[in-house]
Each structure stands twice: as structure tokens, then as C-alpha cells.
Image 1 (cartoon, one colour):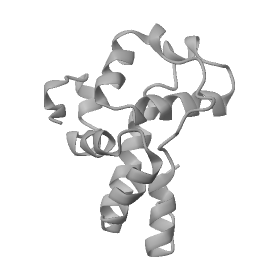
Image 2 (tube, helix red, strand yellow):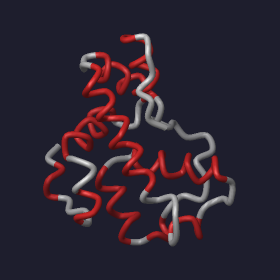
Image 3 (cartoon, rainbow, N blue to C red):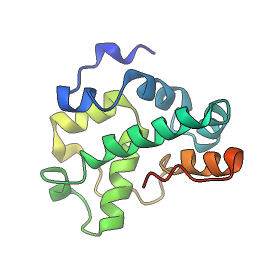
Image 4 (cartoon, rainbow, N blue to C red):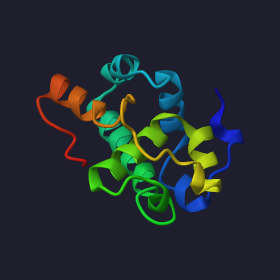
Length: 130
């Protein structure tokens, strides 16, 4: 899918690339598929993916988004990871209308952390990005 037609604010598009969003799209909200994709990457690319995932998620961990989420720090992080893992189109929709953000990520597949897992598996060390 060509994510370039979905426009994000410049401060986000400067830190999270269409390369990242294409990987998320190919993973299709499936942790096993994301593992398969990341296993084909070198360590630098896996680290880059982890950095961009976290950068995108952090944008959702403050007001106004947190006003519509469960209050725990872990819950806020999980919801932000869930939104990122659903792709660029959904992410843009949430940025545009924060009230649409899920209240909780309970019983949902979270893609964050898979890059760290694969980096350890392939290279014997974590990405160091949390």
C-alpha cells in the first residue's frame, strides 16, 4: 500500500517514515507476520523500526489523547502501541479526532516489542529502545 497519500503533521512525518508504515501495513496487525518481516532485516533496520514505532507511540501518550484512555501508565502505553500497530490511516484518524482513541488495549495484539525480541534472537542483544 502506498502510505504517501496519507498526510501526517510535519512533526510526525519527520520522525516516522513511510518505510515504517509500509512494514506495519504488511504485518497486518499480526505479531507472527511482523516477526517474519523483521527476521529478514539487518540489525540497524530493526533498531530503526523500533525507534520509529516508539516515536509514533509517544505522540499519543499526552493530552488530548490520554483524556480518553484508561489512566494507568502501562495502559496508556499499550493503547498508543495498539494505535500505531493498526497503521498509518488509523493513526492519522486518531490524530485528527482524539476522542476516537480506544479506551484500553485489553485483549488486543500489540506489535511493540517484537523488534526487540527479534534483535535479541538474531544478534544476541536488545535494541536498547524502550
